[in-house]
Length: 609
Image (tube, rainbow, N blue to C red):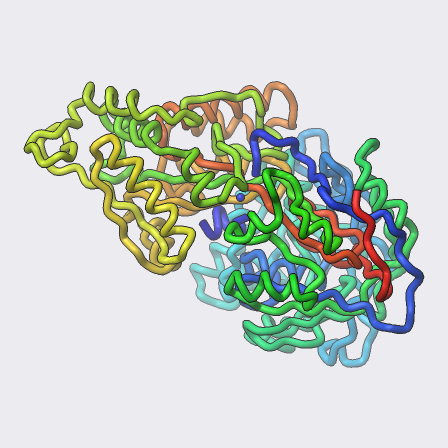
């Protein structure tokens, strides 16, 4: 599902610990820098769309932009559980007692990379740049996918500015004062919210700064001209083919200072190797776009790339042998990392659909029977090749709200119970054709929206087999992703399977997938239950703690009871790194990590353990 409340999708394990472990690692120390450029090469499986933070929402474009542009806050690279730290801000924000006012002070001496838009001037990053960048998300001209989710945060006056621009049809007024978004002086930013938002800090991680001069200079071509303050800059781009980032020669004096948790051996080893080193450690990043799994896999095996993100399920048996790293991987010195991801794969029912929607007992029984009949074990085996674990709810690991002890009907595979439910509420075969009918005698045909790729074909096989086993007929509607998404938002989809990944260490966004006011946006099921909406509103206003955890658990239980969503699995990610790559450590929420990586000099080998 791309996006849920304008967030990109990503999929983790409720049965595994929420920290990664290197199965094959390296104990060699990084070599001193040489005159030979250090170039990291890797591939993306999906093409980029561009590099303007206001306009992009896909993971791969955002990954590139994240190395060019900088927000006020970021995450510690090695800390698990994850920990926020200042990036362009001097320190974490000052927050009012009621969680409505956030005050931040910027570091001085941070500069944008040179560009003709600055007319030869050395351009410093200031508080007004964040004011401008946040306002720009609300400018209708840019159709920002982030606008919906940022509007939920309720920055005082921003929605009014947007509404007036839409009503007047005039250009967005950036000079108009917004009470909730103020540059108090050159380096001080104050953000005021309409209501308590205890987790607004995480929103600040996703709000990078752009310079108004650059936007004005390039206009509609701004996707091609990313000018930021980050460790890298764009120096080569062949659309949908190749992207090159080079070290920003004017990047400020920033050193590796990540802090691993005590006892996290691999993270502690990375910190020991790199601590105090000036960032970035690499000279260049070369990204190829290789959409097919086989050539991407072979490019890594042949040494053309030093990093492979997410080994395709097709090749996972080459990496593991009965759960352990294969002899071939060990022989070649590859570093293998398998890590639970804060993601969930799920199916949803359109609650407005006349067949599967509704809140009456017979409709609830139909959805619950479908959920019980679905063989989730087969999905994990057949679709994910074992690289996932069953989900008990929509709430993913590594987020606040997730409870590893939470057990629900959602996690059951019980076709006998499914048949009993269907029989009890009159979903029986009335015409003798072997398929169940609706209680009024009309045919019962489940329509499932699907894509045409290999993964969805395997998924369709599981659905077809599972439903046939309980006498439910299912048909598939194959169409491109954009068509399905458009239909889903308009309420014209009966059932669809999607994935959603956390962008912050909080499960609140996953609960918003069933929040009534979000119907047709983040809530594609159009579920709208007053009791659930009330729980969602209550937990949103509370800081993390036992009271909020309890409310989130109650909300998750209601979703199982009414079954607008059938949560399937939390996926695992398996990454491969070449022996010479130092410092790679997949982070659950931040994609911008290349500044922390290093390459050993040629001839150095990796030790295994």
